Length: 173
Image (cartoon, rainbow, N blue to C red; front, side, top):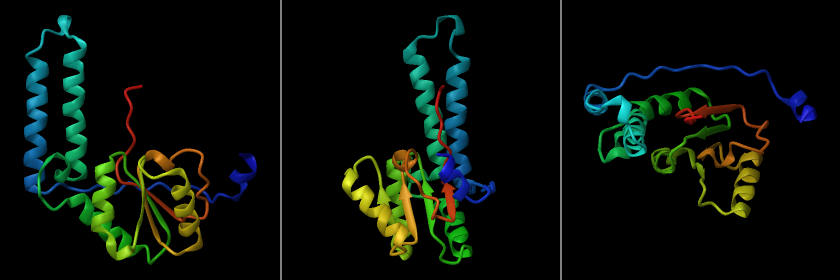
């Protein structure tokens, strides 16, 4: 681990705020209001795991809406995806690894970013294919690799100049 650390460049973090469109904001606010109303209607001394699970599921929907309304059955153009396209254009063909926590979002990104001939790795990708994709990406045959958290652990991607977390990993713990 320490040998690899010497090879890595200094990390630079850049947050890029993206404003939701009016329609995306309307959908987000409606789900948020529904969650808050539901919580306010509960007797907090009697909350059971079913209630907690329902609230967490609704909160997950909020995260999905900020990625793309398509994740919750909508068909709006995603403001975040449009911002990502602009960012990728500005990176001048450098290798980019994009992580997303949702498999369906990874598939949407793969579909919408075809101009970059992206590779897609998810939990459904067999281990042998994952290794092959990483080798192709490292060799420069592809400039964009989209992955769920599947590649987030135990894979050395030091050859990749940019890593984009399309959404941040989240855990109750």
